[in-house]
Image (cartoon, rainbow over all chains, first blue to last red):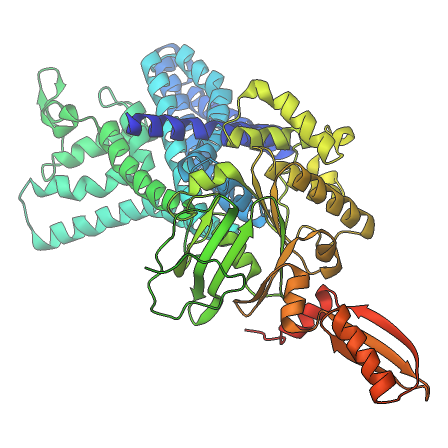
Length: 324
Length: 315
């Protein structure tokens, strides 16, 4: 009972911080500027993709229309993810350090708002902005749906995946902000961590593969180990949620990642195994048991949970040293 | 078992002596015994004993880096001491911080400002942070703004207020949950004379409302006018503690008599009270047969006390 009351209070604590953050953000020009740039870039990518695809198909547009829709959908999602990777640390890494700089953290810490409320109030404020950005671009994704090649459920899962990634990125930014004293350092470390997730996972995978080839170990069980680093890659999470694994007809980034993932599972054969119901390799793989998007969400969620724990711990008072 | 800390300005507890907390005393809003805080080799607080009566205005005076803010941070539930214990409003700021926070308002030396929030929104936000019901906000905010004389500024962006107004708003924030104790770290710092006078009157008003105020300041004349007791702190040590007149009397510097003699020379003699003053004059005129043209009684103030007690030690 006590635990439930404590949890309820902790969740209730989020609200004042969230409301104030949203009120402040809504009054700055910065939010509008970021949203405008975000929308313009998404529109630009959608238009370029559409123009490129229609030009390549010429008069055969009717047949290839669904490929155009798929291309627009995937490239816009990819762009949104790349933009989130840049934008979210920028807006979240100053969340706590900004309070310290403005000397507003101590008055907040002597209130009844606990560290959980402060931390997740900040995270949700950043996530709310992410949600706004994603919702603003939803009509562009809806256009892709109208063109065909994309199921409505994929539009929804794509948007949800972006929101989950935005939330996880906000946790990374706010945690760095809680643990470090200066906004510049928190921003730098946040970008470093995100770079490690995006590029570092690929590098680790490459190292694993090189080791695999050089040791000539053909034990197929090792493949799963090689794939493990990619579970921490946000692009893999998005690909798992919105990518296609059957009837892949184009240079689509998300489907490419997802198919590549399935192919890698069949390594060293390096090919799909044909069978009833489409791709037997996929049907028989672990991906079917635990979907790729769920694996990636759990892996990245675990990192975020660890960082959130460290960040909340850093905000706990009384403490041994007060940083102002 | 150790006796309860009763002596005003009691000496520090020797290192290694175990401190056992006595039962809480209703007449005290703050009790501390052997309060110590080390930052590496730096002793920010060194075995400080403190007793602050309920309903008083208690001033902490000391030079920069003396340990005033460290003591306030511990009492305000933000910092853990290295040793010793404290009790604020009957609760431990270390083990029961939430209980203390419900009863204590803290105002740090610098007022932080949220961009783009109005005065009203600023107070409403802090009302929410103390879980005060939303329906109570309008009357609460109105009352506080009236108290700190900012009612005409409710729609003004906080950042646009003058420093004095910001300090008053900060005080209103510290009062938002109607605490019985206020801990104010340098509230008069950087204020012009008018703002200081307004703040002083406000603090006296709060005392009339039954609140205990613990305040630190560099402006000793300000403290002397409002404080019922003071603590003098230097290099982390509480050097004296109690009503200013009592400390001055203990130090023997409570009063002096400035005497101008017939030959034009002027001398000053310390005296403890009226009797001693009369005895001094009788001795000078009758016994020593010195021609006294004029004598003036000089009462020592907080500045004299401060200079008498502290040595200008910088850590």
